[in-house]
Length: 86
Image (spheres, rainbow, N blue to C red):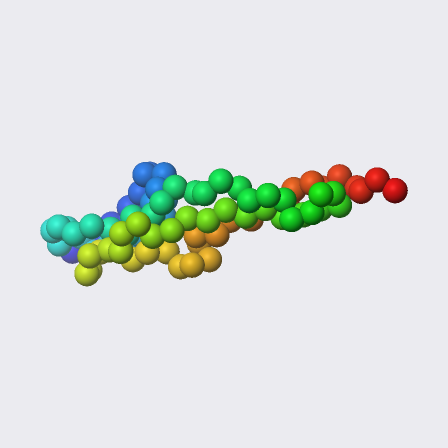
C-alpha cells in the first residue's frame, strides 16, 4: 500500500490530508463552516485589522482526516491603512 494525498476542494473544508491507500474509507472527515463575514476594522484610519473565523460543524469519525488547528480557522487582514487626517 502507498500513500495518497488528497486536496479537498470543498470550500467549507479546504485543507490537504494524506492517507495510506488500500484502506476503505467509510467515515466522515472534519466539516468546517464557511468563513464568517469580516469584522469591523479595529481603527478608523492609520491601519487597523479585521478578522473572520470558521468553526467545526462536525468532528471527524475515528480514523478520518482530523480537523485543522485553531489557528487555521482564523484569518486576518489590514484595513483603513490611509493616514489619519491632522
